[in-house]
Picture (cartoon, rainbow, N blue to C red):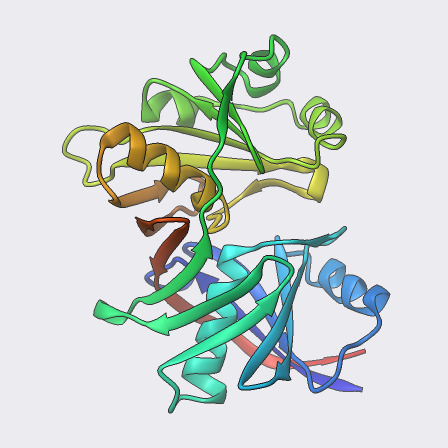
Length: 266
């Protein structure tokens, strides 16, 4: 069987930036183990699969090792594939997912807009073991869908060198990733920066993580007393995410760049 495959750099202004995601459009679902095998073969942080459902699609995401409940950059990439390649006459597309209905629509300046659930987190005591595992002790830690480790500066976040195996062992029972974040430098144009580590899910460091901004936006909106923010994920590839908090929803904007279009044999 041959299937189409797109590889898209999400939250990127051109190829080799942002976060690469594979997108495999389907007519009917493959067995779960086959989709997981495809994701492992692609060896990217996420491979997205979707099938038509109603006037939209049902969407699922797989890392090389597990299926996940929410993935922002692969949703952005899936929306781009549909709106730019498969159904370019559409203005938006809706996906039914494990995290409810998500939409991707055309925005301004060539960006796409995603409508996601906000995921607030609550402060917790700083775990003593977290600092050694990250390479520096955070000032504040919040607990939610992920752990959020807050540092004083972007330089502090950039310098982190996590101990991957201990961090994987620590986060696997929690089923969490760890987001390291700090305010953006004055004059940088960014309200906050971040990095995201999910070794328990097969992703040591993600390049640009849309879903993490569902956690980060409520925190920084409250902290900075503003609902519209510009964020930069400072991974080696890097990417920019425009964030807006509206009630219990987070609107995330970004651009995409095509890298590959082809077929796979399964």
